[in-house]
Length: 402
Image: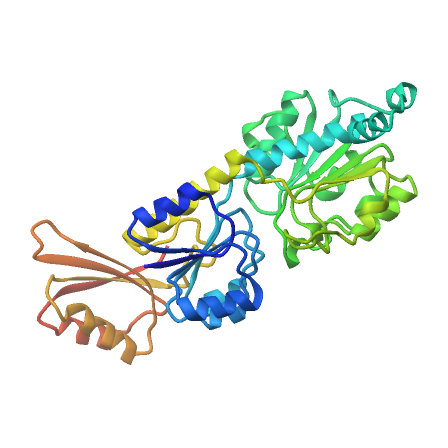
């Protein structure tokens, strides 16, 4: 198996992938047209990336590519529809950097409240401004934090906020209720969260579904003393609306680790209006950049690939349906000999019936087996009779799909 690693990756992870028996090509910094060319040349089975974009052009030039692993939490840098169309699995490493991002989030909140960066800047300029920096801090104890996105990172932020004796409100886009483990945390809708929170912190994935989730209307509903922190994806917050609110003094402050028009990791400068707003603190998309987080991500990446090599199944796969479109299950008992399943599939195909999923189990002794075949539509009696005619088929049964 050939593995191409197109981004920086822990050295022990590269070694462990090699120990699995894979041919590993470690080529960090390969991106854009160079990645398209390299994938075409090497024709890897597995591609590992972090921030590098995996476009449809990359996917289309790969003949043997079977698995793309994002060594990180999100997958918005990978063209998922293009991968799915080609039958390429896409996995990520959710939760491995949750503590690191949560730590930065809390650090930014404290920095905003106590104006720590401004303190340092003035001190380095030999200025002593004790009266100025003593009058604006509100303190975190007893304040309300609104967590937008109660996934792994949002949960870790809430855990730390509760340690500061803050009140926790949370909004989650899906049914998941991770914060139910914290009895004092209360689930609410976005509008109430924005209106009641002293601190709003954003932890949702990027993409069309969350683009400008924090828009001008919602920012206008915030308290004038509130703080806004975004360590998720740049496009989730409407930057123009946020900057207008900061300049007009409609909210107290904001901190961003991500930006709408973010430069590449190796760019020497950033051209963003966010750089020129005094009450906005910015970091350089470093939420997951701790040694602990990167070790955890590398370990999870190795685990995903090891499992795939052993079973053909991908852990944390994001582009396989959790539930099939099956309407019924055809249970076929048969002798464990060549030809039986081929006979079953042939008659299903002739009847234009598609196999959605299948489990095949061999009984003790290896003589007999049973196949549970999930179908998109129910075969009629003539099809079942023809299936049962084969010498290897012992019997069939149809049951409704759950």
